[in-house]
Length: 216
Figure 1: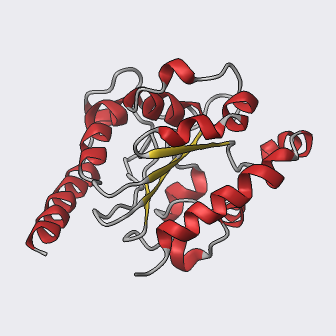
Figure 2 (figure 1 turned 90 degrees about the vertical axis):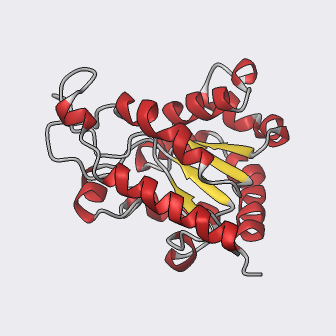
């Protein structure tokens, strides 16, 4: 119990440092963040499942809560869980590659995740989550980071379809990895063109999520 309390204390201190972070405003790699930082993540040292996404969007930046948008609705449907489990950080950790909303480009699309987040925080966050057994990897930025970190970079396929379709290859890693397409409604066409995702991948995903989030 003492070790668990110490882990939570150390993690709370790390989250406090992240919440106070102003690197992308005061010492950015490129253009500074165009608004005040508002890191959005949910973590606990007891979590066994990690959702590794891209970066908060405008709605999440406003709410301060991850996946409070249609993408989150679709992701929870894929996982077969409701808000009560999804937002229980003792069971599900949520750590996007960009911890703050990165802003919009000239076409009003989300900018890429800030590289400062990965460099400053992600290795520390992962070290503070010792019980993660499975990572749901969403998007290229999360795949690049976690595949490299887990020694899977040589197994990456050349397209999203190949990566997701070859999910069994990545279950041998520790933690296990399940690559997913982004649950954005922009990917509705991809889902229609690849019905195997719903028939083959989602049952495995839901079984894994149920196993890792069940109360013991």
